[in-house]
Length: 412
Image (cartoon, rainbow, N blue to C red; front, side, top):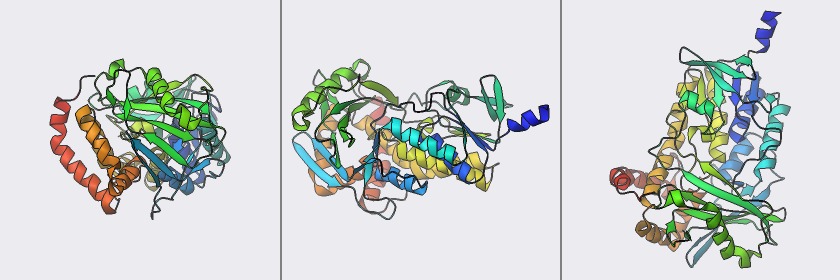
């Protein structure tokens, strides 16, 4: 009887967290015939505060997962506004990514992904907060509700906050920047537009330039996701009132979007942009839990999907070496770009550098194309062409400037 119970608690892979990264890992594992249990601390259909935008990179990941995204509202490009300058650009067609993104409200998006995981054979437990089980420094499984589950691999996909991340040391690096954002939904007759809109020239109520942006993401369902986000590198960040900043931005766009009142109370969240440790014996961190958020746009769904799939693929190849190999390969894919973004955030934390930077970002077609690639998460270590070259040059230049930028960072 005891042997049978212990066998029932044994899995190939355990996953903590049911967001896009966790669901991508569960889908990949279940379809490969592995026994997988995913623990989500919220109920089925829980909401997640987010801008709801899916980049072309995210669509490519969904295609790889064979996820039907036809119910999402298609987005063909981005409208960037900096002061009086406005550029409307289409997502580029590349060999790696499609030329469209989407807006898919997270409550429906996350529910769809986790339902696919269940249909694929994953065992999903809702209202279940799992914590790692450690033995001699190795994660051997999880404990939840007084029960222990065992597996050679545990995937941390529960974000950067929380007890599980603290237990494993997978926390945000306190020396690196992070972001705060707030969003609401509001009715608009422009809800079916095919372009996202990003205002790059935000100011707080004191007139201080904010390193971040305001967004209008049409959801195609009668509403738009309206929000603002800011980086911790700005002067006065600790005193920044997100609700006030959102209301100021809403006032700017109310007439052009014929914007109605907020459908519900605005909700804010923190954006992790670094991680002190993303793997160890018997475990890996994916998505937000690994700090995979682009500091230049706050987006991380695509990185979550990719890292969730990659973690399981490395486990299938070799369970013993999977954590180390995953960490190396995911680092080769994302680290240089994200490191550049973090360094850049210290640069634009200075208002006197932010203002001319914004003029350059949308000043010419070539510069705007590169800004579009950055905002769409279309750049990484293997990106060819001008955008890739510029980012590699920026990485080199900012590496030299980084110590000075950190020493002279604006007081929060």
